[in-house]
Image 1 (cartoon, helix red, strand yellow):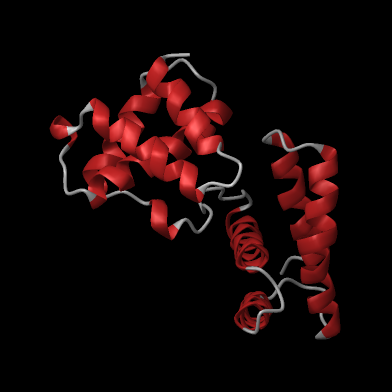
Image 2 (image 1 turned 180 degrees about the vertical axis):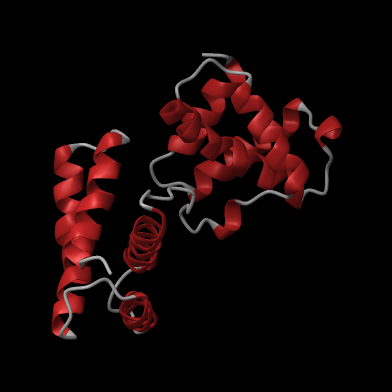
Length: 184
């Protein structure tokens, strides 16, 4: 059995090694990981318990459904629990869990196309991840139009940019999509 404090320290160190800054790690620790440790102590154990991780996630889900916390904050507990569980089980942190972007998961063929596009670039992993967001959004947009990748035309890009501008408050998707299309 591993102590919850040690498991959290291991996860945070893995995040640091992946390039997350000290300030971000402190914020994550304070807002998500420390409450996980405290939840264990509140239930009279210092050892990592999968049942307690699940019960905390259920508690946070209920808070979200009650309007007390945002979905993003609730999902951060789900992600943290997943990472702690993988660390305790394997000794390594599994970073494969992604944000819950239900609207922006294209079908398998568009997903493969997105991966091929990203592999063809010489971007670093961090930049590829950031570029994958507008690409996935675009392919979901095309998918909604029931078009295949061979049927995409310039009008689709323009329509996507217009649609993204309506729904994206800071217009980052629009800017990134435009720059990607324009080759900048």
